[in-house]
Length: 153
Image (cartoon, rainbow, N blue to C red; front, side):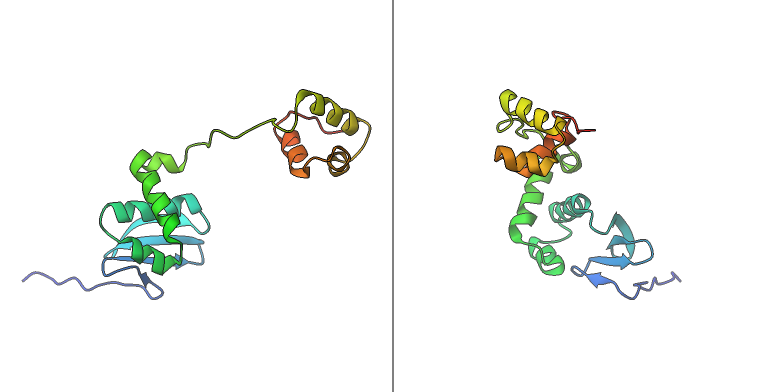
């Protein structure tokens, strides 16, 4: 006579629907996604890319509905749709591609870059330089980070 398998559902599991559930392990700081009683995916708490990829894949494979994800995780419908569209267009890889199209240098023209570097070289702090030139402090910070400007010594 075949042995019956009893469901082995841990305490603390949240059901997304009748088939899919999730569990948060405080020791490892990880979310685990289960199909039935089998673990399918894992990601660290706060990993938005993995979360979006996994939930989009669950919806696309028919394991969940959009409404299941929205209700369980209290996320907006537009975020769920955006993740699904990204998954449909590029698969898993689309969630980990480096973003392109970032604008650089519209404010820091070559002339402004020279003035900014001169003020930094004269000993002014980056926030004071930004205030003096009436440009965003963030613009100066980003230019320092990406190497368009050099920090004063």
